[in-house]
Length: 79
Image (cartoon, rainbow, N blue to C red; front, side):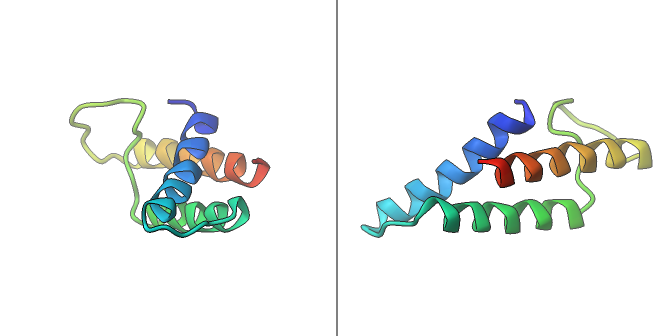
């Protein structure tokens, strides 16, 4: 999944979740929720979701994953 696709997916998930409770969540608020989630992922030293399968946690893989999630964050801001 590209960073742009992941950004769109995250924002849409927040919008849908609130709709399931009968509430409306404006896109700007959904984007804020998605940005918080991505920040938490980055703080957790993630592995790269594009690699798939089991990945040993090496610093270059963490750096690569953080770059991916930073791109997702930029894409959310651009929505």
